Length: 371
Image (cartoon, rainbow, N blue to C red; front, side, top):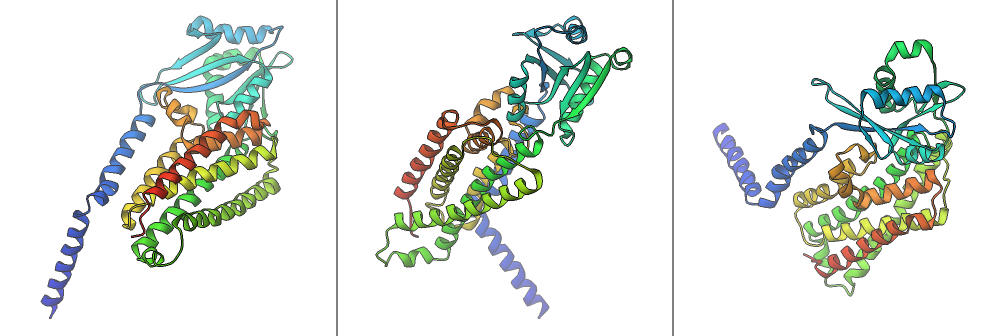
C-alpha cells in the first residue's frame, strides 16, 4: 500500500514539474528575471565608480576667514575644481571610494537641494563658527558629517583652534520624514493600482469569471473604468489616512498648492491604472501575472527614490530614473509638500503621467481578452 502511495506522490510531483517547464514565461519570471534584477542592481550598487555625496556650503558676500581656510584646504590638497564647486575623493580599497562634492550656494538654494534629497548636509559659518545642519535621524547625513569633519578639515588639529556646532534640522520640509511621506503616498498609488486592478482581472480570468460576463450586455470599457474608479476611491482613503497620521504625529505640512496636489494625485492614478490594465489585458495565468506585475513595480520601488534619494545612483542611470512614472509622481509630490510648488512647477509631470495612463489604457482596452 505504501508503495502505491509513494508511486502516486512521485507521478503527481513529476506532472506538476512538467506543467511548470512547459510554461516558458513562468520560467522566465521565476528564474531569468531575478537574475537580471540582481545583475542590474549589482551594477548600480557595486560599481567601482566613486559614490558621490553632495554637500552645500553657504556662500556669503563677506566670506569669513574660517570659511576661506576650510575651502582653501580643499583647493590646495585636492585640486578638483569644476564650475565653481569643489570635489574631494576619499580612497579606501576596503571600504570603497567616496567622492564628496561641495557646492557654494545661497541659503535658499541649499534648502531647496535639501528638500529634493540632492544633499543631506549643509555647512555654514556663523560668528566665526562652523555650523553643520542635518537631520540626526538620517544615518547618511551623520556619516557624511563624520567624513567632512575628520578628513576635509584636518580633524583634531583644525578643531583645536576653531569651534563647531551641530544644528539639527527640525523645520518642516527639511526632515527625512518630509522626504519619506510623499514617496510613500506615490508608492501606495502604484502598488494599490497594480495589485488591485491587474491581479483582480488576471484572477477573474483564470477562474473563468470574465468569460461569464461576455454573455451580458456589458461593455468591457465600463468594467475596466468601474474597477479603476473603485480603486481610485480606495487610494484617496489610504492617502488621506497616511497624511492625517503624519500631520498628527510628525507635524507634516503641505506647503504648496492643494489644487496642484489633487491634479497630480489624479494623474498618478490615471498613469498606473492604465499600466495595470495593459499588464492584465491578456494573461490568464496567475504566476505569469505575478511576474508581470513585479517586473513593473519592483524596479520602480527600488530605483525611484521612495526611501532614499536616487541621486546616489551612478550618473548614467539618473536620466533614466527621472523619467520613470513613480519618480515623476514622487518628485512632484515632494515639490508640492516641501517646496511650495504649484501648477507651473509640475505641469510636465501632469502631462506625462496623464498621457502614459491614457495611452496604455487605450492599448490595453484594444487587446483585452475576456478569456
